[in-house]
Length: 240
Image (cartoon, rainbow, N blue to C red; front, side):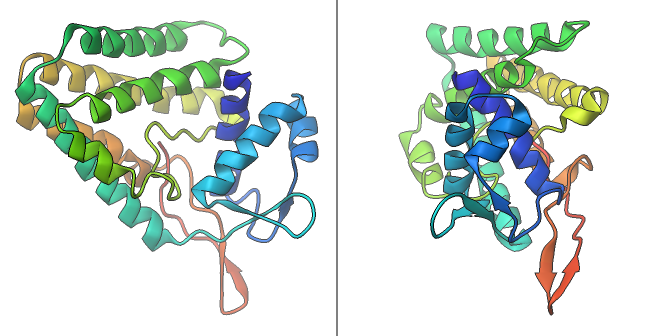
């Protein structure tokens, strides 16, 4: 059930970021469940997460409303996240990895590689990739050897797109999305290699680039916002 919720979450998040669900639009678990052909439980879980992230807000009565996204807030949150993730990667490289930590990172990498190598994606490809992606990022953040890094991250964790391993996905363009995720997987491999070799500078630089891909890659776009009463589209890249 967790993976189904992850799949719904990634798809609806992507719809909001691409402007397919505009600010002010109504969104409900019943409608999402019907659209995604899932039960109401994963739809409810996904909408609760989107609400916590600040992408939607509770309506009076039932359902939620899509919120306008502040590009400045998103950019600032991702900038801070990338700095903290880079610091965590460098710290782990300098401190070394425990055996169990190395196993978790290798498991994450092996999982995403296996998913990406499939000729035909399994039904819950998105959920499986999201789980493995989150494992990679959380392991480095929480096991780097500096508890203060993870403590500081908690202050921004629920801002839009700031959560570790956040994934937005467009199921209508699987080939392009798979290419994007393949790049992310390759960056994980490079980060792991740098940590394993104790190269803190390289680990930090690659992790920062990887974390800031949310702003640098032109795959998805921030949802349309309203200025001066007119609907405008802001092409600020926000993939993950």
